[in-house]
Amino acid sequence: MFKVVLQSTIAFFLVMVLFSCENSITTVQEITKEDTLPLVSAFNIKYERTDSGYLRVLLRSAKMERYEGKDGYSVFPDGFEITFYDTTGVPISFISANYGIVDDKKKTMQARNDVVVKNYQTHEQLNTENLVWDQRKKTIYSNTFVKITSPDKIIYGDSLKSNESFTDRSIYHIRAELDVVDDSVSRSN
Image (cartoon, rainbow, N blue to C red):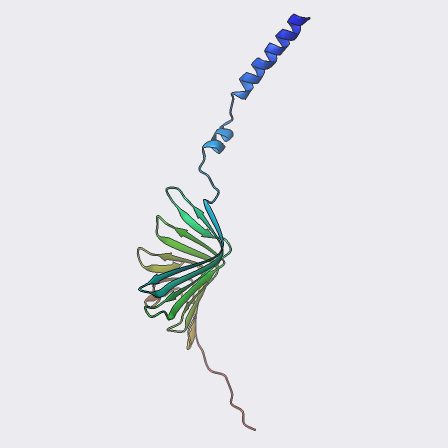
């Protein structure tokens, strides 16, 4: 009886050892894969960049997640707003979107979902669903439908490429260019 119990116990431990040493390929991949959790999460952020005592950039976002690694990046999953200022501290342009991602290695920022860019000097506004700012090339581009509203016209196009100051731009496959007419009527009684 003791011999049967001992043999059963030894057999049980051998089976446990054999099966506990075996790892499936998915288990190994899960253990060795790069961490997908953000290194830092920040909420209700307000980032200010100054130069010579003047505010140059103001970034506001409800949430930012920072991911590290060889290809570090930051994500703004709940959107962002950025205001750019001239050398005297006067606002010159503004960008907002419902989602954003900044790629440190490529030096690009991608804005998605209800992207709005305003130029306060020219009183123009760009609306699109996807916009990329390439800091190295100092360009912005969109491969999606764009609408540009200025004081005297509205332009619709399929895509856009511009310098980062939005002063030299190309709109591709223009669908419409509408002149804005002041339709206010003065009334006298």
